Amino acid sequence: MNRLSFDFRGEHLEALGSGALHWPARSVLVVSDLHLGKCARLSATGGAALPPYDARETLGRLERDIAATSPAHVICLGDSFDTADIRAHLPMEERSRIADLAGARRWTWIEGNHDPGTAGLGGETRADLGLGPLTFRHIARPDPGGEISGHYHPKARLALRGRMISRPCFLLDAERLILPAYGAYTGGLRTDSPTLSDLMAPDAHAILCGPKPVRIPMPRAAVQARTGT
Image 1 (cartoon, one colour):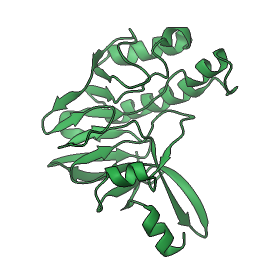
Image 2 (cartoon, rainbow, N blue to C red):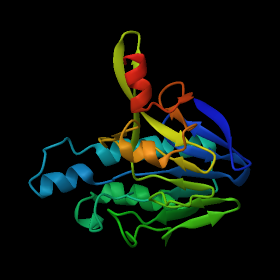
Image 3 (spheres, rainbow, N blue to C red):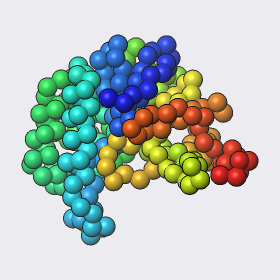
Image 4 (cartoon, rainbow, N blue to C red):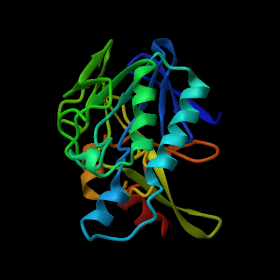
């Protein structure tokens, strides 16, 4: 499995190329913003007609990451489901797969803005969760102090071999870590946006997802303007 190791708040963590976070010492796997049921909800409510395979693809990736890391505890950092009324939008097959995963180990659903409350598919539901020096929640707060969150779906845009590319990424500074969206067909917020530029410390880094995760200084508007990219 492709992964990049780094230290955060005195803990050794691993960023997986899929966008998941592994905490080996605690046997914890963390994912954010699965947005399960997004395509089905959009189709049912007259939105964009997208192929209804997002949940299948996302769950397949999650099953592979669980098989590779064998976590005792999985934490989902909110917006795991695209709507609170998930039973009306997810087929029984996907609901059964989720229940099987959540029933085989400790499983924590952190509440997000799309999915407040429990989905009734196993596991525990929390507003946030503290483990050792780290706190897991959906949306970053002004006073992080070892916070791991999601919500923003960060993506880095940078020049590679003469063309611009965009890659989902982790964002990391001394006090906070923001995970990329794990779900298929999810959009993203560029790291050079004022929201993320203001949120992260000046020395923040991005860890690019993909076949070989790479850590780089967080791309920002000022840097891009200066380098002409």
